[in-house]
Amino acid sequence: MNFMAVVFVLLGLLFFTGGAVGIIRMPDFYSRLHPAGKLDTMGLLMSMLGVALYTIQEFSLGEVLTGLKIMFIVVFVFITSPTATHAIVDAGVRAGLEPWTQDISREEP
Amino acid sequence: MKIVALASVLLCGGILIFGTAGFPDFGDPLSPPASHVSPHYIEEAVAETSVPNIVTAVLADYRGFDTLFETAVVFSAAMACFFLLRVFREDERSPSEKLYRHLPTGIILRIDPGGKAPQSNEFEPIDPTWVPHDMIVKTTTRLIIPFIQLFGLYVIAHGHHSPGGGFQGGVILGSSLILYALSQNLRMAIGRMGETVSAVFCAAGVFIYAGAGALCLLMGANFLDYAALSPLFGVDAIQARSLGILVVEIGVGLAVMSAMVWIYYNLASVGRHQEGL
Image 1 (tube, rainbow over the protein chains, first blue to last red):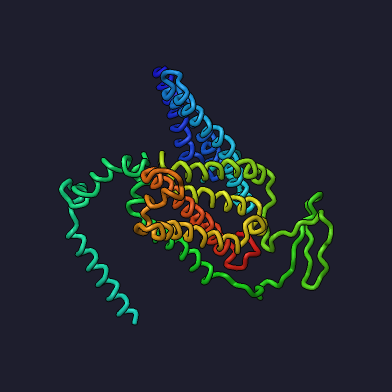
Image 2 (image 1 turned 120 degrees about the vertical axis):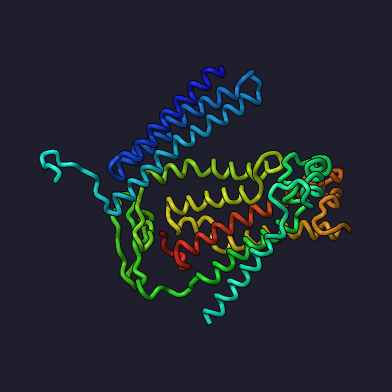
């Protein structure tokens, strides 16, 4: 069980790292929000699953309840995080921010 | 005059900084609070108050006066916002034209001053400044707000056993109402919890706290000595202190929640209470 927990937390950290790199490397506002939203959902699912597995060592009622509460965090973040990303993108569009585009035919000076 | 003010501020600040030299070192085990008060709290708090969370016991019982006046500070901050910002007259800059959204089609009507407002139920009055009509955000907040409020109540009630208490739970409750105002609009939020209600709740929270203390005084003990309330609760003195902390936390939660909502109403609409952000 501990081994599985470590594997899940490491997978979650991998997703978080990828998301963080994406936030820095992506060219503009909208595309930066894409890894930001992904990071919250997948990375949090993996790492919280790992933490919940680590909590449940010997299937007693208290430990299972704690694990369920940890999974509730994931449920609520799954509902709210995409909505928050949507609202931020919506605000950007309404404020008139143009999406980044690159014209391949034209050479950069 | 500015130079005098600057000089006095610098003087006061310098004296305060100079005064810090007299403090005991950070983490010094021989300092007076660490050698007398803290060991008593750590060793005796559970036995004296039957509250496992020592922070709550110290905050609401041993140092009840401190928290009482913190709550009073929150209340006076809300009052100050009200007195500074609230405007009761109509805004001259934008004449009172009214906007109505036709719900089935989403068409927005503008009614000039003196015009006749639509009477049908299909029209919804909306804010003069344009508020986005976002189905996704509205649906999600409608789904999530009950859970936020339930969690806020849990944090208030469970402050004895886990991190939490009146301030934290009150902030969570207040933020759920602010989220409602953000996702719908300010007018609907005021319809749910009006200005009068939030003002009365804010005062009632402080009143519950101070009233619990005064009740102890009436029962023949010191102010905020909840052990005197044991005949009222029908439990022994130690359990009464635990219940007294709960009463006080409820008062704090009520005051903080309504103070946050009240300040938000005044700040978001510059005191006019008719338009959102």
